[in-house]
Length: 96
Image (cartoon, rainbow, N blue to C red; front, side, top):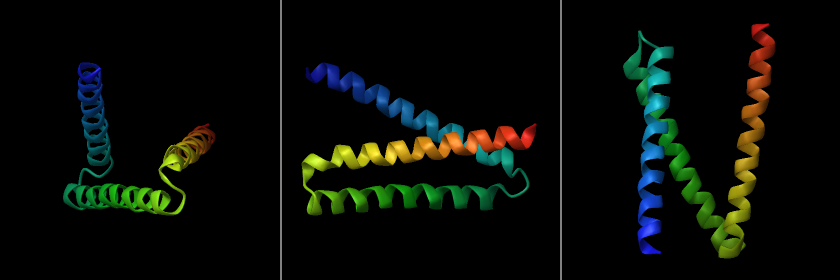
């Protein structure tokens, strides 16, 4: 079982690194003339996300208990997916 979790953690880490690199390349392509400003904003927003997630996770554990952390995480996942679909549909309407 430990070996399985080790392999899963390895692939999870690789996926997170790849997503981060893809987002950085996207930011650099959107602002080729101001890469330093774009990357500093990207880094700040990324760190706000990490800190905000830790803050909300701590609040959920203290207020609702450890058993609720998955439900709150799923709620954020559904909200993020809904926002992504809304933006995607809006972007397609603008391009037509």
